[in-house]
Amino acid sequence: MKGVIIAAGYGTRFLPVTKTVPKELLPVGTKPSIAYILEEFLASGIEEIIVVTSRRKKSLEDYFDREMELEEVFRREGRADKLAAIAPCGAKVSFVRQAEMRGTGHALLQVKPFLGGEPCVVAYPDDLHIGSPPLALQLIEAYERTGKSILATILEPGDVSRYGVVGPAADGLTVKSFVEKPAPGSEPSHEVSIGRYLYTPDFFDLVEEGWGRHSGGEYFHTYALDALIAAGRVAFKRVSGTRLDTGDPAGYLEAILADAAANPALRPVLERFARGMLASGGAS
Ligand code: G1P
Figure 1 (cartoon, rainbow, N blue to C red):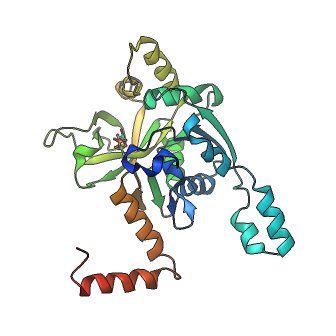
Figure 2: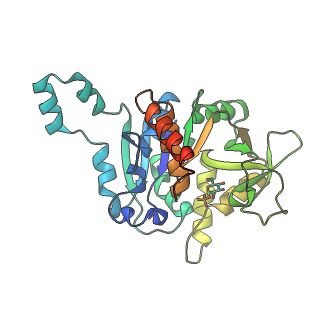
Figure 3: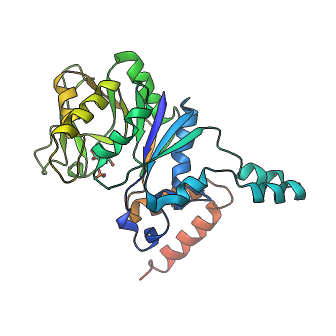
């Protein structure tokens, strides 16, 4: 099974830094956020990864390349720890460029020729997952049980109108309907889709078919998903673990704090800072 990371977006919520730094390279601890998805894929047995990128994100490709100069320096100095920090990631990572920002359906269209007619796990780069079993593996297991495309879901995330919401069928497994960002009160349930999907090859055929009929502007994969749902070919998997959403500065901060809280070297800093803030009544 291959993994796909859709990483061509402009990252406008992080301007001005994203004028020059892809948001996928913003650090959570000392690792760029995209490395967390890579680790999730590897832990799920996914070793071939396609990143959809763009001409504005050349440093993303560099990140996955060898750092020969540093390797040489650290080898000379006998710095095994530093060598380990820059060791190749262990996956075969390739890149496909999306020449125009024409939506997620258009991004998925770019990877279709490289999937060899096999299912794949698609990740949105803002959704990080902490926990075991790794998120992609939870989807792969659901696919192996059902043979269907799988949407990763969580229950009751707060404001459901910010998400794609699943209307579950009576079997509690199949997706009966899917409403993208429903008006408050009109949602079919509180089971929301997060940025991880396992798509079967028929999904990509439908993405291509929908593109053929598309008449301009951004192209999302709504047509393909709706058609697959109507055919009873989509299931959902309520996933376990912690979801971190680095899509905006607030969620990004939370990811950094979660990482620091789990790191014995950084946790005391966090505690000291929190105590100081609480004592002084918070920052003003
Ligand atoms: C996207 C998807 C939505 C999903 C969400 C999860 O929305 O379209 O279905 O619930 O990611 O983060 P976005 O947040 O990109 O607007």
